[in-house]
Length: 73
Image 1 (tube, rainbow, N blue to C red):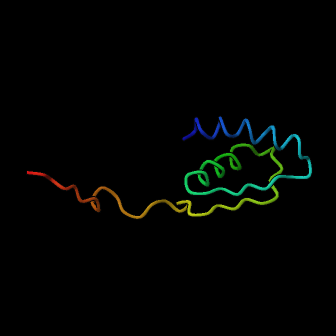
Image 2: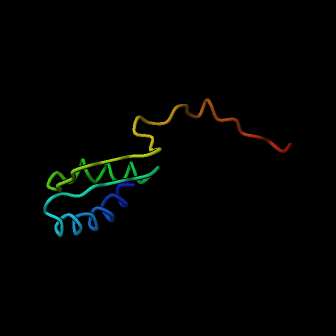
Image 3: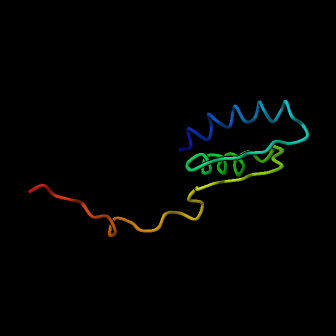
C-alpha cells in the first residue's frame, strides 16, 4: 500500500502546488486509507478538507479465527 501512497502522493503534490489555497480530498474505500497515508506522510501539503467514505480507518473487525473456509470434500 505504501507504493500506492507514494505514487498517488506525487500526483496530489502536483495538484497541491497548483492550488496554494488548499485542496480537498474525497476518498472512498481503500482510497481513504491511501489518502490518509498521504496526509500523514506529506506534512507540507495544504489539505483543507479530508473526507473518507467507507474506509476501514479503525481497522477491520475479525481475523483468521472468524474466517470460515468451505471444503469441497
